[in-house]
Every structure is written in C-alpha cells, then in structure tokens.
Image (cartoon, rainbow, N blue to C red):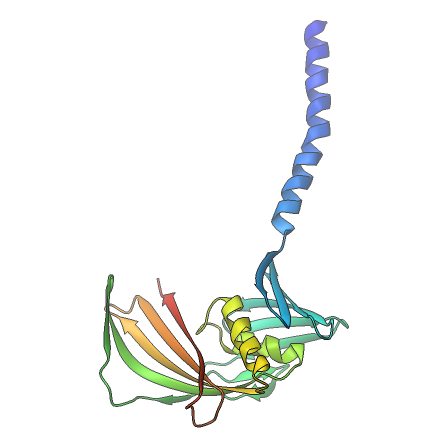
Length: 212
C-alpha cells in the first residue's frame, strides 16, 4: 500500500512540475537579445526574427531574414513587404526594383594579406549607394542590402545611425573582396563615405565568411 501511495505521489509531483519546466523552457527560447541600442534605433533578435524600433517615431517592424537573398518585413500596421535579391545583386521590394546591383571593378593591384590560416588575395571591388533616410523601412532595406558583406546586424545599424547623426541621407560604399588560399573563406572590407566622390570616410567594417 505504501508503495502505491509513493508511486501516486511521484506521478502527481511530475504532472505538476512538468508544465512549469516546459513553460520555463518556452520562455527561454523566446527571450529577445539586444543587437543594437543607439540614440535612434533599438534592434533585437527573437529566435529567427529581427525586431526594429524607431525611438523618434515609436514605429516598429519585424524582419525575418530567411537567407542572403530573401527576407520578409512586417510593419506595425500589418503590411508585409517582401525583399528578394537576384543573382546579380539587384534588390526587389514586392517584385519592384528598389536598388540596383553594386558596380564591380577589378582594380590594378595585387594585394595579399597574410593571416594565421593562410593568405588573402584581392580579386574585386564593388561600389554601391544606399539610402539612409529616416523611415524604418529604409533601415530594413539597408540591413538587407549589406547581407552578407557586413554580417552582424548591430554593425549595420551602427553605420546607419552614424550617417543619420551627420544628417546624411545616402551612404556611398566601397567593398574590397578577398579570398583565402583554397577559397574556403572570403574577406569583405567595406568603407562607408558621406560623399559621392568617396573622400569623406565615416566608418570601415570587416567581415569574414566561411564557405564550408
């Protein structure tokens, strides 16, 4: 009899504690992580979604980057915008071209950078102009434009905010592309300028991307 009572108590305890444990696990997986918290914008990640908040306008948007070439943006009014990128690098918003592919130039230089894992070799430079106006939608487009060349979302947001602080509505970029011996890793060094002649440097970022 005592054994039966003990077993029943264990079953009752398990049934009470299991939902609590499951609930705690669910809460843990849905907690958001702050990627960037600046003067104008707050950006968080919640599972596979990016939450963008404009501190000045109190507008918000949720961006789901499905791949380097595909993303969905849901605005606070419920409108859903689809961003896609073709093989040439052109960006479309709901199938309408909103940003042309960067121009590609192979400069007459043979740069090699020695790294611990091998040597990086220069192979091309791309140039691009990106709007950084005040709308939250343009921030999302800016983030998508620089995937994968900048990488971390917080870095992109920091660059956009720097331009906004300067009162600039367009960033002019130059990205030098390098590959490591064996082509297993690529390096992208991006320079951000506030003028079309690319003489006023605002910031520089570096991204490494493993191919396998």
